Length: 243
Image (cartoon, rainbow, N blue to C red; front, side):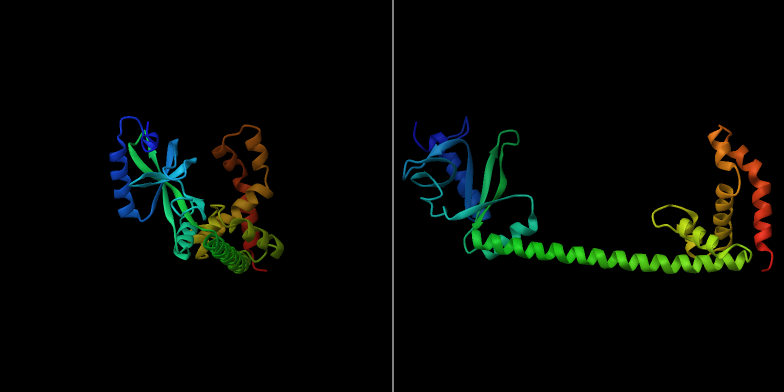
């Protein structure tokens, strides 16, 4: 068996493999094949897994003048793009897929200085993204704090006898980002009176009645709400009295 034939998958001739590899090279640039069975270099006689097809047969990377390149696996598009752009010489590495009956890209061979530069650029991008996320987190926190303050003021306006500390606690609880509570609804964000009243009533229900204990005792939700409703109405009425 010739060196060229040892690189082929079953049922393929060396001529067809060279034709397919040549076609891939024209469409992708320099193409290196990852052999499924290994091969013997037609020039130096060494064996390996990566080859480039030439007229005289498969050549190892050293004999193909690609031995100084380093392998970058597929998976990071930005790193691949930058390293390939910075590398004066590069090659696409492909491998035959028996299941899909086609060559599939495995990675890229690039010059090591180009890869190092690309890695530094990507790290800089990651740092920039982290700083943007930190700034956005601070901005959201400031926005949330301002909204909670406005909400607390509105609670006190609607319920003058509600203690300021309690109003602030209600505002912080109901306006918590991602909570799905009434303060995060469109009506709540608009400081709608009905939405604010619902938030205050919910606070009274859980903190000033035995509603939670009723639920733990197995009382149905609707029945438990009915039982504590008078206490809630009384508390809200008292808080609505002018200060």
